[in-house]
Length: 397
Ligand code: SR1
Ligand code: MG
Image (cartoon, rainbow, N blue to C red; front, side, top):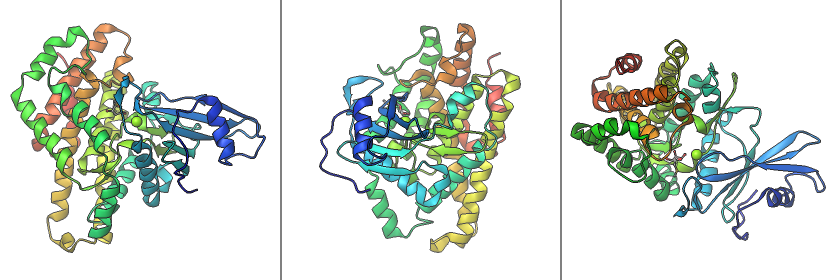
């Protein structure tokens, strides 16, 4: 269905979402529909509209003109809904198996109507419950290798890539990441949020000038390198999963950025879950960290060998240089994500949900040490298996 320019924006309610679903012809007139607002993210409304008689539903996601997590005092562009639906469509052209189908989008209403994935579970929730999702890393490794390769200068001709990059210029959402991931947690900024008991650890971090220098280098990469179309917010809350399936949702932060960013955010969120688990339950997370990188590396290399449009592709050493740089950057980005999810504005339930206060504080101290180590040591980490060693070495004694 085409994007209509005629609608006037207003936030939907459960009732108006039903009317909209009928008006759009998503269900035959007279279908008895129910609707629940199920959005539990930081930014948007999400309506689950269901035909109870056929047990068939759709999702209507609507951007609000402000950040829900803070309130109306933080205005936020509605254009992110169009970025999201266009990113889903672009990803779908490369990996339809890993994204929801988009049925309809409307720029003026800031809505995307998409496939109902309620047979799956948000991966963060499942991981917190102790699920392991055996195929998660294989699927995410493939999703990343394919979408990053095919939208880069290695998979697209130079003109097409620049045009695509232009359509994903996303300054407002990038600013959120520049501030909340790369800046505020490393300074005494009022968006930060941490337990008073962590103040000494946090102040030590704020006073670490080597850490600030290395984080500044990572932030610069995020600001300036436009390698490929990124999801831009690939944490485990942006992934629906089951033991068999994986679907990536919520790419409203999509933009052209550095190859290692999505990988880093995903690895960080696996490690954040590992930080919330007892030692003997961490193995599936370490295995996912390793497999994500291995699958990414292998899939990206195969695409490079067989489908590269860049004249220099066959020059010995070029692929290895790109992989090495992506690996090192991903580790640094992972460190930033771990730190910001621990002391910044937007936390994760993996850590905040640890009921015992001492255990929770220790897990958060461990997170800060791990994040700091990943940023500072990234250039000397050569193998993905070293991450589990660093995880153990940064455990509090
Ligand atoms: C104000 S938005 C806070 C966070 O939620 C989103 O999911 C992004 O991760 C962002 O940094
Ligand atoms: Mg999101």
